[in-house]
Figure 1 (tube, rainbow, N blue to C red):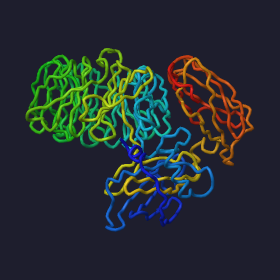
Figure 2: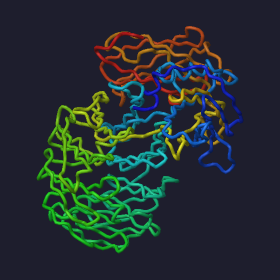
Figure 3: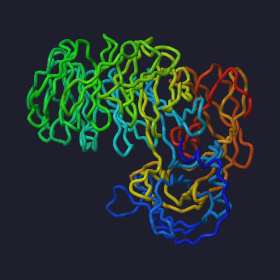
Figure 4: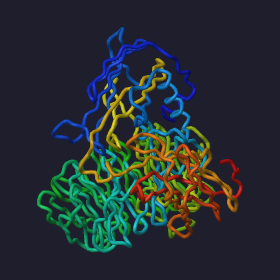
Length: 626
């Protein structure tokens, strides 16, 4: 699926190389016919210095030394790990580090993985599951839980993948999540019953619909810039090709509110039809398409002239409207008729009416297919985009054991099926099954699944942190060095076979309160985090003094908290020192589920939240391996 999986079969050989070192400057190696240049650039810095906890762009340029041309589609794998000992890693140490990272060892994990993507599930509980698929595909890979004030309804992700905004209707707020730490950094008041959220193209404002209209939130200060009242909702939000207008549909009034973004004021209301149920913007026609559930028509609104220029007649019962990539083909779900209507935005004409599963409600798109989820069917419909406008081709495959609408209380505004990070693949949640499935095009059924441990996944989202080819032979991503100090940056190529450890460093960031205060680093020594219920298990971890980089075996107040989110069961105890910085606790998990283990030491002023937690999977049939 990703570079780490491709490289696991690679035999890592010791090779000679030449290197030029410069701390956080361009570093080059020439090895096995390729030149690799590594550089780090602070994403937002006036001084040019890289500080801990600050976004930075990590970039690798790869060229062929014979032809002097960029090496495209190289798919490099890279990691970031803080140095445990002074001095750079030798070739053998570097190879061993890469092998450990490739194997996904729980005992040897990088501070930052530049290859992975994360799967997020917006749960029926007040939390979000963060799943790391690359630790091993096929079962639960729960990395952590993001705890919310109340269950989330919709979410929006910034382009740099660093901020996730989650609406919480019951709390009347929007949670702001830092995806580097997987923690809520603040909660923003968003009016009564906030539901849909959307980022305008330049991401200056986050728009949050509520019972009165929309709250406009400044994404820099996380303060509400304006509350704008509109006609009666519920509402959806969309934007044109620029940052001039925002468009808010008002379902109960059958109107479209046009909001002047620079002035943050309502420009006009456009009548679009009875019961405006959904809308979407086409970048091809530069128009907003608004469905009318009662009238059975689609209003085409010119985003420059701000008026309805055409009405596409369909039939009653229209709901969700979405566009395939490029914006030409529009897809409209009609759950009452169990059909999908397809229209051409270049001509604004209906071209197909295709029967699908009972009660279609959501769409997702790859380059080749349009995927349709149907609430009343366990089958997902896949329409081949190349056949739209001609003889339509469609296939179906199982999307779980039960129809997703079997649990109607778990419906969400956010998408339950999204394209995977790999091309031509799809990930979708089935709330009735309480499972998340992975599907690759051409298969008769999903290739595998991700367990969510009895939690109901109402929606899913991918956050890709892997290196991307920004131009031919140039691979980059944005990441943070979590603490001040020097780091190894191991890089591995599959073809040609190249392994080398570069270096990076970050200075102390005075804006990060915890950077200097965390006196301990933790290494979990548990080999297998899957434990059987109703049995005693000994868990061990090592504590290392961050100042001396030596194990600390003298602490007598190492507290351990184990709890079952959202806190229905918890256990606290003092860990026993065993020497060489190793501490041990005995846990007995009463029921199946996902538990979190936290460690503290009051004498070292280290709180539970300051050290990484360990996820424990309790299963009645699990091995008793420790």
